[in-house]
Length: 326
Ligand SMILES: Nc1nc2c(c(=O)[nH]1)N[C@H]1C(S)=C(S)[C@@H](COP(=O)(O)O)O[C@H]1N2
Ligand SMILES: [Mo]
Image (cartoon, rainbow, N blue to C red; front, side, top):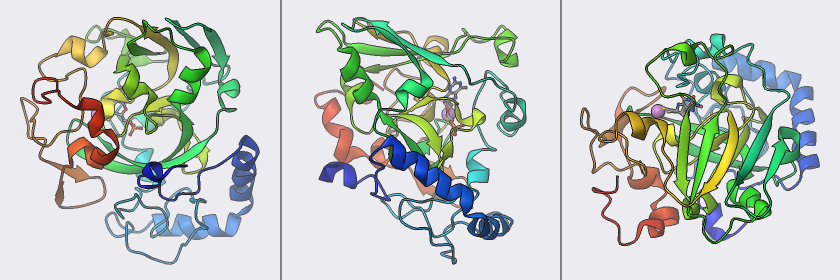
């Protein structure tokens, strides 16, 4: 891990192998006592359990599900949101537009077997079983997630760098963009029967954004396999962009020469740009992006340029006018 990455990854103990990843999960399973204590802490009234610095002090790199007050924080010192918050306040329109209803509706979602087709302008197109993707080095990343609706959370993910996968399939020199597609299955996704959205959900990145080391394919959070409501079995996480770029339940990754169409940009190009980098200086036409509400907090906080990741990503946009290319 280089210094650049250390700056954003707290705790900095990236998991180095699949076996370490699984033995850590075994450890979690056997820690019944710690978990019980944490569950009690999670019952504290909203707003008091976060960042109160109470007693749970997990071994660095071993976050405890259900909440870890004082345990896991981002590189700015802000504590991770509780597991309960992260898994009960979700945007996942394939299920419902009700954020608090996604958890229940997604309970029976089938994530196995699952495969991801990686193709387009690559020398080695391949369809991967999810299990096959776990062999890429699994890392821990504590990232802020800033929704375009002006709320945010801090989430401790596990996953692998998208760049590791791209390297393996070898993009052709003509490839400029990466297009992502979510599962299309109206039988499992009640929302996909509605007429309002051009399903399946699609997203896209420029190739250099896709290769950036912060760009993660998440396979879990808080040391657990990815919950269905958060995009199981695997979803993109691009922490310097608005949350809708971080597409869930991916079944297809395609390298293209042309900029791909994406769901939100197709519906409302004036509101949701292709780049959608978090930018407090460029308001949404219908609301300000200058501040945000961190879930679990009462006061609003200032939104940071590139969601606080400028040092890492600003150079990707040198020479661009970000108020035009928003
Ligand atoms: N397939 C799909 N991916 C999606 C969405 C969605 O509705 N469908 N919502 C997006 C939005 S708007 C946000 S803010 C994040 C929310 O992720 P979370 O529920 O894990 O916090 O997922 C993004 N990925
Ligand atoms: Mo969002």
